[in-house]
Length: 194
Image (cartoon, rainbow, N blue to C red; front, side, top):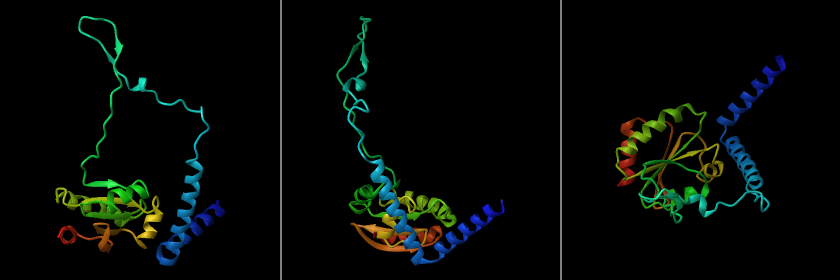
């Protein structure tokens, strides 16, 4: 029990050291990125053929019956159409998703780099979502968890959280770090919208 406490204390000390040193933060994020890429390469390997049965069009068919007939006949397979929901806030899933929904967006985007363990992020996130929602689609908000997307955090030089970027036409036009009140956030968004 004494040894376990010592190990936990030293882990906490090393984590707090990483959080307060920008150089160590970048090294930590780079290490996480390499680990994520390695694990992704292992997980994304294709299974051998025949291991899983392919989805047949019969699975997409729905039974049809006529009013006077008691027999059930399968109908032609239905087409499934999907559309992107019109929301003002969304979570980034991966690098290509970020490229598609943020960099290539015609609408200005506010990108909130946050972490689950970050107290100030839990204060800023809902406040920023509320202010973005008031803009009625003139700006959207992308949420990026730096622990899940270390590569994006490194690419955009995020050294502390919360960091918020304003991106317009694929370019970072403004940035702030830390918690802001609603009036400051509204001014930040108005400057982005122009």
